[in-house]
Length: 150
Figure 1: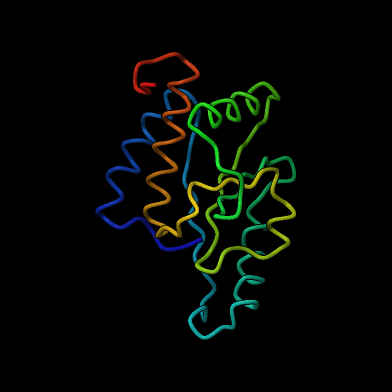
Figure 2 (figure 1 turned 180 degrees about the vertical axis):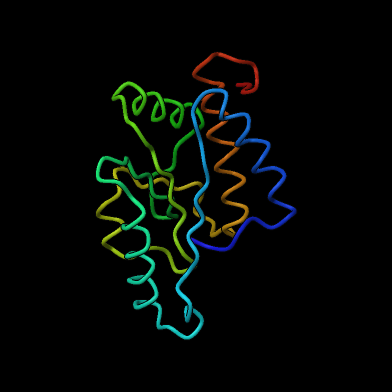
């Protein structure tokens, strides 16, 4: 959920996206918030965003929801999660960054895994960049490449 990448983030996201594409096909889908989002109550906004999110998902998608209340993973643990999804022949893994107030309970219930990058609340643009870098790092860990140093 959110607005398109800001220029200062776009270059980094595109760089890591290109790198990930050497391992897995990846694409960003940014869902615009509802038109009157600025005047909606938090609960109503989350419900309307949930409808847009759930509509964009396919029934067999594996949904990994990014949420500060989720489980924190190390980079090697994220690599294991990525490998697990590949081993299961998962057709599409969707990493979801919710709206400004998080996501409605219906989206959390739909999630196959809830992942926390940090207990900190981070701007969505920065989360996109960190997500792209960490997925790339996970790919290099799986291939035993030297990007990730332990």
